[in-house]
Image 1 (tube, helix red, strand yellow):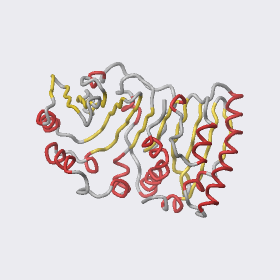
Image 2 (cartoon, one colour):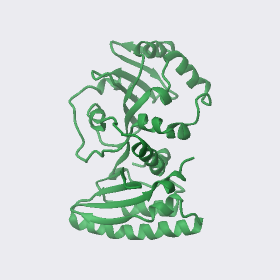
Image 3 (cartoon, one colour):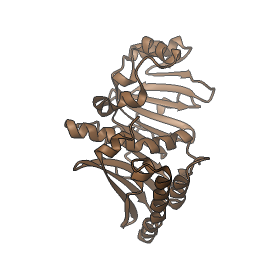
Length: 300
């Protein structure tokens, strides 16, 4: 199963978002949303999973830089904001999103007027049954449904099934992989590893070297005057982890070559080329220590 191109854009943007996280940690204490609480509300499954503490990104001013200022959106979005009272730059605090087989599941922590949201769905030709509302999206297979969870959070599904949001609220299940303590992270099961068409050589090589992994996990933590990024690759055993760590040396060489061709010591390939890999049990672990000043140059 291939990953949509936008998903790899998320991967490439991880450094920029991590920079925003460090900005928050650097200048004010960060007390973020517990990602585990949001993950526990997702229906069972295993797919590309992204967590973002948008409150932290908003406090840093980075969300505005990444998303642009309000008012530049489509008429449709402005109409939605006017009717529902919800504007994500202002009202979204955190979310976890899982994408699997063309289906998306979202748990969001946000300030919402559920009455207004319900009326918006009904005005768009949708329907509401008890606490669940649904409406057709931009295509027949894009049925958008949502439900207010017992925790007060929003559970939303984009799915061919117009009642898919009914799957929220089941037995809480936490993932088997370690959930990072960071305001932004990305998890990817190994079966979804596939470089998009037209990907740069270094990215294609990196994806190829990770084939056979059970999963991979990007995360970021502040350390000293910079940020420590980590890439954990879960392998099938200790021997495989040793091999994976060794193969990544060729990936780092390819990254250095790409950086030299660009002639920019602060480009994404240049920063990633400075990583180090080692085997730790049945995992290959890559770490990068990058100064804040260099990270800031990646921001738009």
